[in-house]
Amino acid sequence: MTTDISRRQFISSGAAASVLASGGAAFALPSLPALSPAVRRQALAALEQHRARLMHVDRIGIVDFTWPSSAPRLFILDVASGTSQPHLVAHGRGSDPTHTGWALRFSNEPGSLASSSGAFATGAEYTGKHGRSMRLSGLDPENGNAESRAIVVHAAAYVGPEIVASTGKLGRSLGCFAVSPASLGAVLEGLGTGRLIYAAKG
Image 1: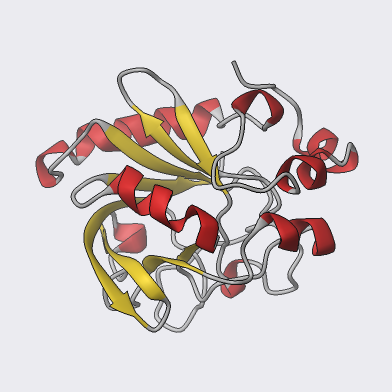
Image 2: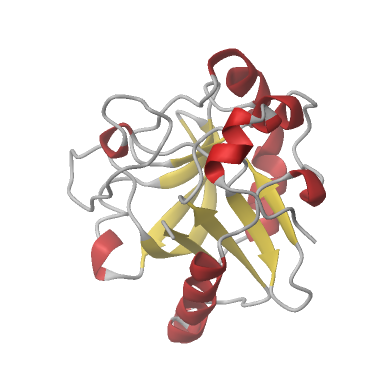
């Protein structure tokens, strides 16, 4: 059972820094903010909507932009059991131009440097300029340019518990779902090819 606390309580209590400073790719759920029920419902509805375009429906990735970048807000959800594994994930520069730590807007436009919302299908892994990465295809109108924008899952040095502990927020990507190097293996293996990632703000 997750702890149901508000965003303000999570930040002001220092919970973000104390929890994340413990390190590790996975975190104990009782100490973390809960996955927004609204975003969870939307993600499961998207899973049903796009089922025919997916290879696997046993697990899904849910990026809950209800929370700031200091909170582990990428949840790898086991659909059958309802359990989830949370990870830190950055949002795009264009979603947070003044670097507040909050994703404020979303865009599908090339050059926006913003995160996109909606449903994505995970594709093949590859090794690129960010090292081990995973391709994504946008399944909705609001993220249909994901492939042409090269929106992928990759690791970045500006994502990690030590970054949160020192600055109170993560760095920003160019629109990709950037995770910590320590979490990358668990995230890519938890998702695998042909599964859903759903991103939204509750």
